[in-house]
Structure formats: C-alpha cells, structure tokens
Image 1 (tube, rainbow, N blue to C red):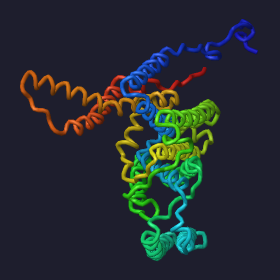
Image 2 (image 1 turned 90 degrees about the vertical axis):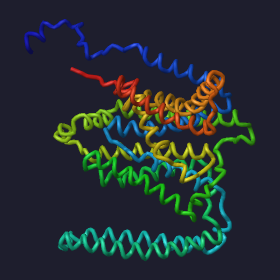
Image 3 (image 1 turned 135 degrees about the horizontal axis):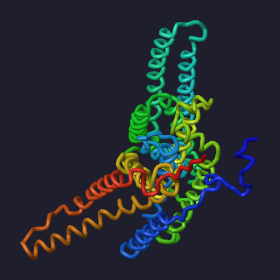
Image 4 (image 1 turned 120 degrees about the horizontal axis):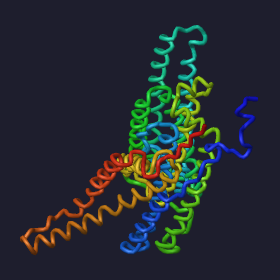
Length: 441
C-alpha cells in the first residue's frame, strides 16, 4: 500500500464519484414557455383544432425519438424517414380496413398467394446462386450467374403478378384489409419498417455515413412510388378512407373528446418509449453505443462488434418510425401515398431533433412539439399579418389586396422553419437541450 493511500482521510470522497445534480432550470423554462404557447393556441384556435395539433405533434415526437437514437446515439444520418413513416401508415390501413368480400370471395387470393410463393422461391434461388463460390465456382462467374438468373426470374414473376393484379383491380378494386384492431397494424408497421431498416443497414452500415444517407433517401422514394402505383394493394392515388380508430371516434364522442382520448393513447406510447430508451441509454449497452459513436477505432480495439451494434440501433430507430407512422396514419383516418412528402416527413423531423438536441430524449420531445406548433401556426399568423398589412395599405396608399393570400401565407411555413433552423445552428448547434455527457475520473 502506498504512503498516500495510508494517509488518506477515510471520509474523503472523490468529486466525480458523487456528481452534483444540477437544478433543471433550462428545462423548466423551456417547457414552461412551451406550455404557455399551447395554452395560447387553445385560446385562439379552439379546443378541437388545438387537440388535433397536439395529437399530430405527439406522433411526430415518436418519429423524432426514432431519429434521435439513430443520429444522437450512433451518429447515423437517416435521410429517408418518409419511407418508414409510409410503411407504418400502409400497415395501419391494411390491417384495420374492413375485409373486401369482392376479393376474398373469389379465386383471386389463391392466385395471388401462388405468385407470391413463386417470388419467394425465385429469391431463394438467387440467394443460393450467390453462395456458389463455396463450392469452387469463381466469384466473377457466380456474380454473373446471380445477375442473369435474378433478372430472368424477376421478369417471369412480375409478368405473373401483373396478370393477377389486373384481375384484382377489374373485379374487386383492391384487396381491402383484414378488419383487425388498428394497434395490430401499428405493431406490424413497426416490424416491417424494422425489417426494411435491417436490409438497408446490413448493406450500408459498413460503408461511409454518406452512403447510408443516399440509400435511405432512395429507399424512401422507392417505397412511396411502389405504394402510389400499386392500385391493387393501396388504391394508389384514389386513397383509402376512413381508417378505423382504436378509440371511440368523433361520431360517438365529438371531435374534442375523441381527439383527447386519442392524445392520451399517444401520450402513453411516448411514456413507454421514453422509459425504455432512458433505461437503455444509461445501461452498458447505451454506453457502448455512444463509445462507438465517439471513437469507433478504440471501440473496435476493445473487441466490440461495431457493425452489429450500429445495425441494432438503426433497426430500433426504424421500428419507432414505423410505429409513429402507423399511429399518425390512423389518426388522419386516410391513407394517401402521395401525401408522404420529404419536407413534411423527413426534413421536419430533422429540424425537431436539431432544435431539441440529438441524443437527448427529453429535448427531442420538446423539439417535436415546439417545431410542430411553429409549423402549424405559421400559416394563420402569416395570414393575419398579411391581412393587417393590406388593410393598412388600402387605407393609407390605396393598395389592392392580392387574390392568393392564402397560398402565400401557406408558404410562410417554409420561411419560418428555415429561419428557425438557421438560428438554432448558429446559436445552439447542439440543440436547446443538448445531450448530457458525464465524465468520470
């Protein structure tokens, strides 16, 4: 035992062993200001409109939590949030819409199932061909065979699928749904989004981060194009409406009360997700994820499986995006593939995470609600200011009011969000509630 250890005061405690807790003044101020903004919206816009806004903000909060664990926990930039949201909305529609007897009462389901089995068999054949190098086949020859066989089988399967889908559209319109509770579609939507995320991550997470952004952006557009052009599955541009709610709807309880009940459901979902993410963040798994984010080389030197952990966090984020997309689609009671836009369902979520603070779950929830209130209220506020300016101009200078003031006011959303993200990046680059990184030693 060293001399310094012998003479150490037994009551001595290192400073870093018991870190002092900081009074959450910033959090109280920000959430107090947010509460005041919500109450102001209720006073101006009414209870029904304001409650609808809060439900949609809560759905966006789930999407933002999915992105913050990808971007904040692991440093993964996902530019295709829209695609995973669309998958969640599609599953919510497919599982909740009533059964279409015009489809299920014919031989079309059997024919469609047969074509899907052909597709699965073709996929297994191509995967088997890619493994021929294990039996001594040269890799170049294996690649050429896989491409040729894959193209031929794809053309065969797609021709059979087109024949069946054309019959579905002519006889039944579309396949309809399964008539199950909406929450089943939410769960399946999260699982489907996670499966697609696993495919993307398995291919791209081993590459540079910019490849991941490009891949997610491309996959999102492919998903949207598929859903928009698959009339037999989604009715395409004709949309599917109404989607049943898991709670009593406006017809039973009125708009305000029904939306308030739906808001309580989303609040419970957010609370569960927040609790699980908080536990995971402070668990050894969360510390390992952040260590990989901060120093990948040293984490690999310590024996950590970098790609596996990054894949885990990416899939988890995609699951939350699919779940949030399902809840949002059900609340809107409409499935419209054309309604999924990169501005609304990718860029806006990015702004929410940036404003709140990547990696801070509480800050992400704050950013989601605050940004969505700004996004929604920018239009009526801009319209009010424009009408005020026109009134003053008419009285003072004889101006004539433009005929398209409503559309001009709608464009104010983009201007306000652009100014907001510029100010945040300039004065608070880590967000208003940045991630709290504890140091020891």
